[in-house]
Length: 446
Image (cartoon, rainbow, N blue to C red; front, side):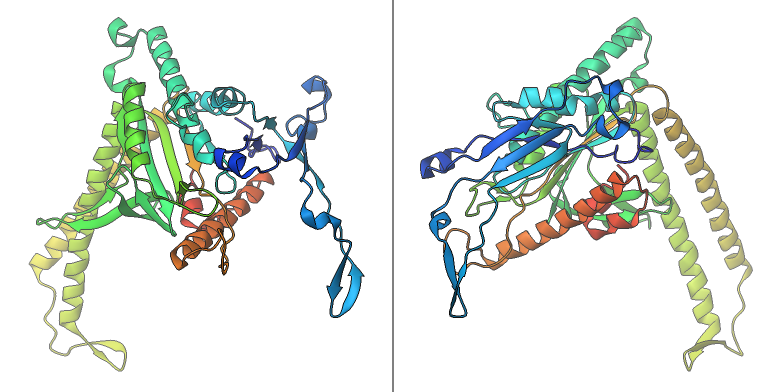
């Protein structure tokens, strides 16, 4: 994984050129003229540090149009020469450019496999698919189910293969070297951001909230429930652990089926949401620790609620509000001995839970910060296609009000994501850029 301390090393851009689609071929669309410039055949050690990564370039030539023959235009009654737009555009600074002959397997091998190696080293990598509607983003990330496995599927297969090999090298369950609670598993989270809201694709499409907890960590949670005993619980984003590659595929495919898609004038099955698929290498021990932590947090919230209710009741009983200020009543009933004892007991119970939580946090950090692969995470983000959000009066690009709102939310979150990329590419660690959308806030800790 790139060293985050080096300027410009945290973000790399890979371009994939797709062939014309079936609809484009039927319309007789003309292919763009593309010329890929490969890096010089010079050993990496001989290149300057800034030139060791961003090596590929791309030259794009747009096809001629009917308006090219028009030489003059009328402006306010005057005939003026028409501006001639440049047909050639050149781009550079790409880590790799894949031609249209490149299939998903080769693209994974050249562009995504380094992220798998980083996850196996216990680190985190994010893979984004960005482009216009119909550019082939979902085909690349999720595959087509007909012999073209997506990036997540190939990553899952590679992770399980390597985890099994490491288990065999360490003695495995059969050899008695690695105990079952410490055997690596693949934990899956799958959500989508649609119209600015986060939905849990593995939790029945339940709406979730992206919040920062007391420790400064981003948590994605559902609705808050209060039990009959007063226990306050907040449902976490649904997770599912897989022991085999096939199990992981079944989990993800169930989430894909729940994802929101729609039709547009450009693509009849366009993803209208940003899909965020997280694959984390964990163990049963880590899962148990996290579940215990959630139970203790619920109990701590319950105790804190009882403490605050009692304190508020005592204050309201002893004070009256006059002209916007709380004034103690002359005949205020003092706090009883029983109330003092209850407050002291609740404080003691809360501190005891805080000590247990610290012990669990230390155990989790030890389990995920070692030399092994535990804690390694791969995040695949299939971004919704960017589109023009205006309203055309007629033609295939006309949109309903709902579609216009979708486009605005999509473009807003894509703009916020672009801001984060620019910040990361400069080596900055500022966190303010993540506040622009639910998408960027949900990905902040990755």
